[in-house]
Amino acid sequence: MLRCMETWAIYNLKGGVGKTAAAVNLAYEAALAGRHVLLWDLDPQAAASWYLGVDTQPELSITKVLAGKTPLGRAVQNTEYPRLSVLPGNHGYRHWDAVIHAARQPRKVLQELVAPFAEAYSLTIMDCPPGIGALATAILRAADRVLVPVVPTPLSLRALDEVRAHINNKKVGQTQVCPFFSMADRRRRLHRDLLATPPPSMADAPGVFVDYATHIEQMGVYRQPVRLFAPRSRAAAQYRALYQAIDTR
Ligand SMILES: Nc1ncnc2c1ncn2[C@@H]1O[C@H](COP(=O)(O)OP(=O)(O)O)[C@@H](O)[C@H]1O
Ligand SMILES: [Mg+2]
Image (cartoon, rainbow, N blue to C red; front, side, top):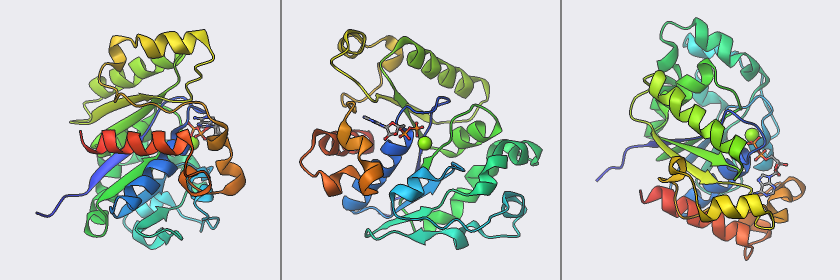
């Protein structure tokens, strides 16, 4: 049976919580598992693209893309890894919120842009910039699953509640919210306590989380997914387990 393309968004209104690290490693795991993966780097900072060795960001007008004048597919670049392509981050993406806000059907904009990729890919992973404006709403609408990295702290859990409230208010459809603990530091009492007794908002989280790990920071040195330069690390094992837990839901 032909499997339809799935779309996962790695999203949080907060920055610095491990979205990009997760996007790169989960995309790599999915490609290793045999899926044809497109990582769409929606962040103007283009960190996910950079981690995967893609530096070139041709100037792209999202106004023209939305008007159907520039096909987005032309911007796709192959990585050096089989089955993994990147739609690189772009400086023009600074204007997402304003451009989407001005669109005729703001909520549907990304869904419609992603749809044609179903011909070539079985999984699109969107690495999202922080924020909770028009772009976030369109992302939540386009995604079958929204993966929310949550640092085990009260403030991060509050942000998760805000994401859930946003999803309910904006009627973004059937998006499945999939939070997971990220940057967990078990040396810290607060982190340990929250991991041991997660609040109800984390009830549907997979039993897997991503620890705070130097290997993950080192992605910036090697410019590779963790598995490539630290195949036996706990971080590599955790991203694989996370991919499998989400994939088999
Ligand atoms: N689990 C982790 N352990 C240690 N450092 C991490 C971890 N996840 C991310 N980082 C580091 O924290 C910083 C922010 O991570 P990033 O994935 O870019 O977050 P976001 O995309 O949510 O802004 C980066 O320098 C990254 O290397
Ligand atoms: Mg990021």
